[in-house]
Length: 111
Length: 113
Image 1 (cartoon, each protein chain N blue to C red):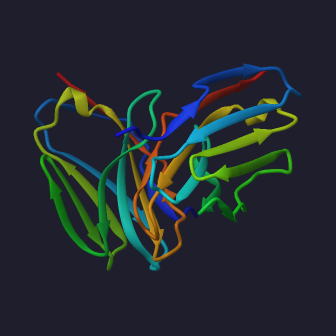
Image 2: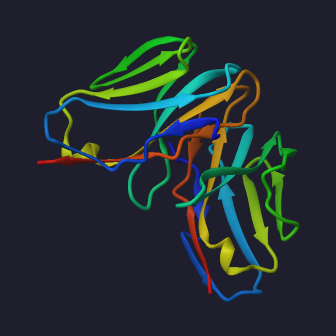
């Protein structure tokens, strides 16, 4: 079993929809949680970075961590065609400096 | 601010040749990471450095792979001899101390024929 599980999709939604992307993880030692966005032929770009449980909001993006159920979510409000990309969740243990990535979810926003 | 810079962006070479990938981290970052991305295995950490010192190379697949960081602003990942199964996108990332977030370059797309 992988340490971080993420549905690879693909996921296709109409413009303006609310998008929900999710990951589960197995190791309770993970303390830091990230979401990266990766456009085709580009490197992963850090979108959200959170520590422990709770919500974090940045514009149209909200990251949510539920450590009790080992569940990580990213919500995108008012989705735009420019949000079309692969979204990768990642986790890290305290002081470990070793990111563990999910497989990535390929998202398409249709105009 | 300049991000992580990788070169070359694309490399096509024949099996058995030596391949050298280069990375310039973000100025002031003291951690540097090399990753490999494939469709089958996703993003995998190969090796990382703190203050130019290799800390964990457990992800390096074979002795054919080696990485160096001679100074704070430059690192190389070398494959010798290269094999077709090494074809992948190789990313370099840099970060600050501890659990500071990592920032990625745009990768080197490597094809071994």
